[in-house]
View 1 (cartoon, helix red, strand yellow):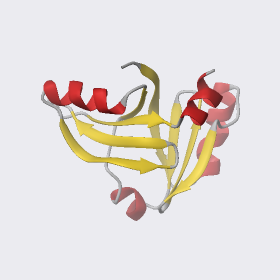
View 2 (cartoon, helix red, strand yellow; view 1 turned 90 degrees about the horizontal axis):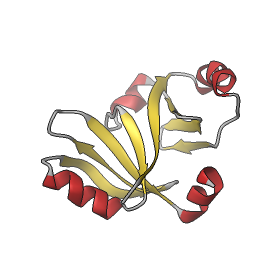
View 3 (tube, rainbow, N blue to C red; view 1 turned 30 degrees about the vertical axis):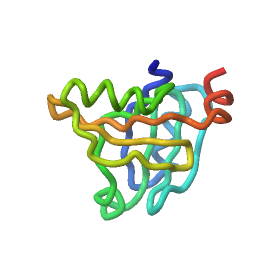
Length: 124
């Protein structure tokens, strides 16, 4: 099991205005951009931007980061062995399989195992 990529989460009520400064900071366009339920998600550099109304955001599990891993089940086993609680999932989404875990210290993190197509496109 390996961590392949980590994203800092940025919440916004409007995607395009959130992306403009990040595109300049990163020096690249989005790797991903898609609708997910009532929100829009975009990834560029080490940022994951989630945009939607406060009501839409309130329906989603909160997390301080999104971590892409090579083996989701092995990650789950490791985390729970160290006292983490799985708070949502595992489930399937547009990018692959994922779950949310609350670590013993209270931090909540989303863990994702990307589809092989996405992993190859973004990481290689």
